[in-house]
Image (tube, rainbow, N blue to C red; front, side, top):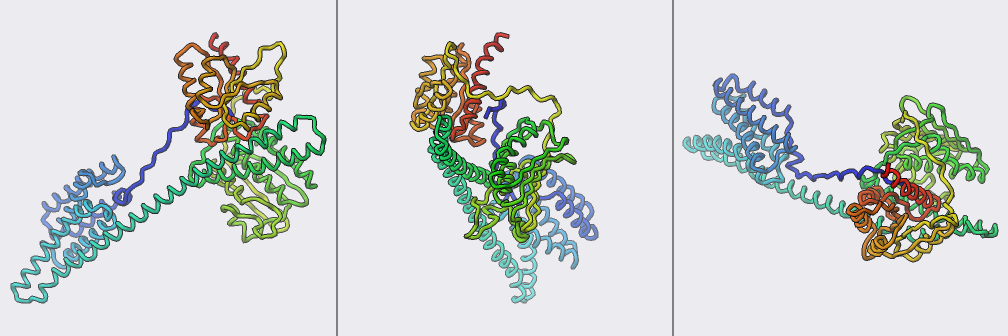
Length: 584
């Protein structure tokens, strides 16, 4: 796959919010509602100038609070946040004090409710920050203490000692309720944070494990599939060719399972991203369907493919992921159909590209349709099931469709068949398609032409043998080195038309070696040498790293001979054209 000229997207940074950041984001409507309610209750009993002054201060503090929220996104526990929190709480407490002092039963009841509700609100919003909790609660505590002291002193003066115990009991109730509750909520939050951290660590460990296992499994698979491709080009008896086909199909099946596991891991981690490229819809869909026509014929099934005129043309989207959706749905249709046929129709209407995959298979029971796109869900989960699979294909299809802004729907009648419909809002490209030369067969070296000088950096001896064997069948003899440092040294001492660079190597990895080569090219007068990454680490974020380092293309392992030669041909043509372009 050719790397785009644009750099990788900048990594998105996320900030985990503490509870006061999550909860201390007061809504403006709540502040305005409090001003109105306090004003309605206070107008009949509080002197007008006091009311205006209080409401004016409340408006100013609210504006300051909104400025902090606008700048930071939340009210924090820094000095500005503490000051705003204390000021608002003090104004609430002051309003309660004025209503108690000037009012009678109704305003005093409102004042008590205001203090109680404020205390609960403070507890729920600020429990994890002791400083903010105390700053917000202190004014209310002062008002409660003032009111309680007045009641206590009056009852003591009257000699009513039992009633004098009521105010201290009220204060003690607040303390006994608020302090332990704050501690319990803070402890619960700490446990949630710890559980979240542990879950994230487990997810990272799983992703790292899958990445390592992917690399380690792809390496022996490269030997199996690479040599199978090389032997198929030899003149072998039909029986041995059939055995090779079995080996290759089995290896490709294992590779497909491995790719599904990696895709699923990326989907769960929210790291699956889409590339954007122009492609011809008819060319892509017909090419994808060509794989399944012989498979259907071997099962005695009819296979029909059609694409409406409205759906033809060029689009901009991720062709690899679109092809993956088509492959998975069509493969399922062929796999689960024993008689009748499979039909695939591509259409375009109402701004949506629609792909319908219909089969006359066993169908899906009505009680299983709702959970069909779940993880590890099998169409037949019994111990006597006839078809294999891990149940990730439809999960991945749905996630890819949703990532493209579309959806997948299914209708099915048991014993009659199923129809899967994919609807995608793909961008159409109106400009004329670029002229693309037909992909040529593996290049053959003309005897009187200068040999193509290829430097290959690969530390694994099996991979070296596979690469040398595939290239030698096209008349190409690479020079092998075993790490990035040796590749740099060979590049400095020789002239090369192309470099094939592995990524994971001892001494120096391929990315570091590529950066070093590009730095030397930029500082000197040596022309740019095409570098193709040949690696088992070919996930989207890894490809972005290779592009940033200066690599031109990526050919994933296990090697596909056709893709390898296509990449080599493109690199050699670009290398030959570059001096002419510079001269022009």
